[in-house]
Image (tube, rainbow, N blue to C red; front, side, top):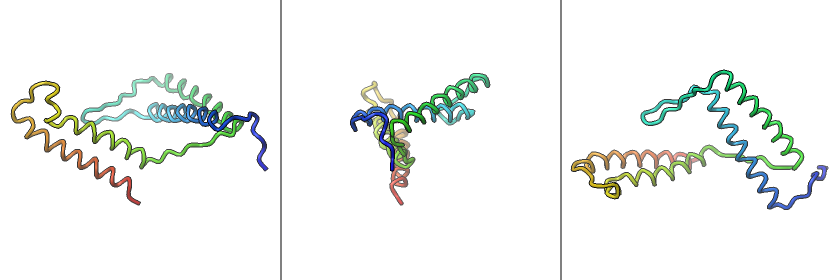
Length: 144
């Protein structure tokens, strides 16, 4: 038989606390990933981990302290764990990317000023191909 929780909370209050603590925990996990990596390098995006060894050590120490407190809060307040499925995360990102990519097709670029002659013939097919790939990635996450 499970013990009664220390505090009797409404479901709304419990969800509010859980939501904020899940957000905190998710960000702490992201910090850990960033701290433990040397960054990534791609065509337009570069992450550079310029934290010193000492900074990394101190941040990881603070993260561990927070996680111990989170563990206690979860147990004492009888809070639930949230499971984030990577396929849903990728699918959601694809949805946002699709919209952003469509916005740089030549017909929408006019809002920024005159579009140079020949740019639509060059850019639009490239963007269309990227959109197709993003759609395929999205579709792959929906298959089982």
